[in-house]
Length: 209
Image (tube, rainbow, N blue to C red; front, side, top):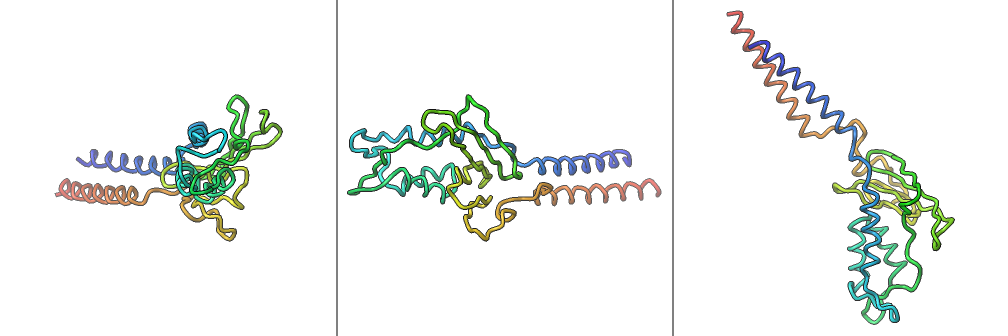
């Protein structure tokens, strides 16, 4: 019995160490291609009239901001909608201009980890419309998913909680330190260790009786 309980203690401690390691690994890299395809899909599905530029699939800038906010922080969504759309006579119009620069997946791009909740992408573009420009994208992990925290430095700063306050510290908000663990899991492991220890103590007393 004593040997069995000792093994249980060791297994529990190993499980605790595994949890600490898994937590330190963070959320993995952002799904760059998936987010980029969603971003470009918003433009491809506008169904705008080529002559009047009236957008048929959406009806207001507010609606467009909500759509863009699915994959980016609200401030960035508002900036993009203001740049590419306008409202006239109760209708949503697409401004006649080239679309936004986008990742060229047939060319190399650099994706750097800033911390567990923040990655930064940069790429020197070679396409016809935006050739020579450097595309920069900040990805932040927020509300359980990766989104754009910034793009081409449209916002003054990038924060993991989506704030654009110049006095805001990037180490606050939703970010957890690299060694952080999930509190409920720690409680569960602690209780398990205490329980196994108590059973081990009882078993020793019985064996000595």
